[in-house]
Amino acid sequence: MTTLAERAPAVRGLAFDVEGLSLGYGRAPVLRELDLAIRPGEVLAVAGLSGSGKSTLLRALAGLLAPVAGRVLADGVEVAATSADRAMIFQDDGLLPWRTVRRNVELPLALRKTPRAVRRAAALAWLDRVGLARSADLLPRELSGGMRQRVQLARALAGAPRAVLMDEPFGALDAQTRAEMQRLLLDVLRDTRATVVFVTHDVDEALLLGDRVAVIGDGAVRTVIEAGEGADRADLRARVLKEL
Ligand SMILES: Nc1ncnc2c1ncn2[C@@H]1O[C@H](COP(=O)(O)OP(=O)(O)O)[C@@H](O)[C@H]1O
Ligand SMILES: [Mg+2]
Image 1 (cartoon, rainbow, N blue to C red):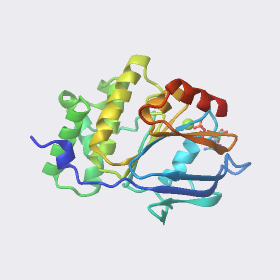
Image 2: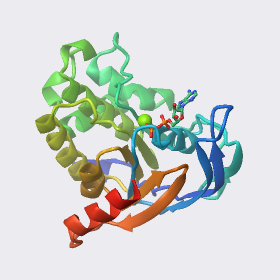
Image 3: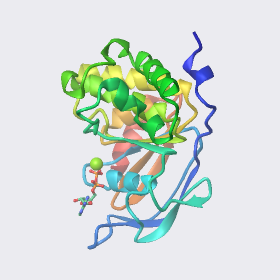
Image 4: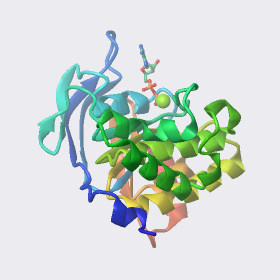
């Protein structure tokens, strides 16, 4: 059997350049004149308190929210609308309730007019990868919260996106399921070179998953911390908490 890495088209992670970006919903801006460079293929965790504007920033990266000022570039091209290149994963799963697990995962491929047999095989391979090979024919309502998040992950990655934008995807899961999902995510991301932006209010989750952690607060990026292997976790944690 071929591995997913062999089967999947070789994607290159998107580079994002956030330049002088201000975002808001009409009144005072939520984020003001943000500058941030997101490297191709990295996992950037975005940490911040509830209400600090994490989801707002992610919406702008996705092309769901137009800037008040400034711009977002993806590989040098201004982001003006959503794109299949940039997959979103939310806390609420957004699976289609009337479609089986397999057919949910096939969706991004169906939208690209991938032939039926190819998309079916790809969906089953991704479901196997996230530990759901035996749940392919179930409906979303027959799954636990953790299983639904696995389906979302499989669906996002089946489309071979160049960036995956994740908004507190494990926020509603119990502690043990959440830890399992974090391990699965780290493991599965080795099969893809996509750039990942992972939003969380949980500092430990940010430090576990991120190659770097951007801390946002008071409408700005307070700091960006390198969080790779070998760093002193307690020291990093203190540095993040100081900026929140
Ligand atoms: N659709 C919206 N309309 C108006 N205000 C919003 C909307 N979404 C978020 N906000 C406001 O923007 C601020 C940042 O929200 P959000 O980006 O959701 O924060 P976070 O994801 O960090 O918790 C909050 O003050 C929130 O009330
Ligand atoms: Mg949010």
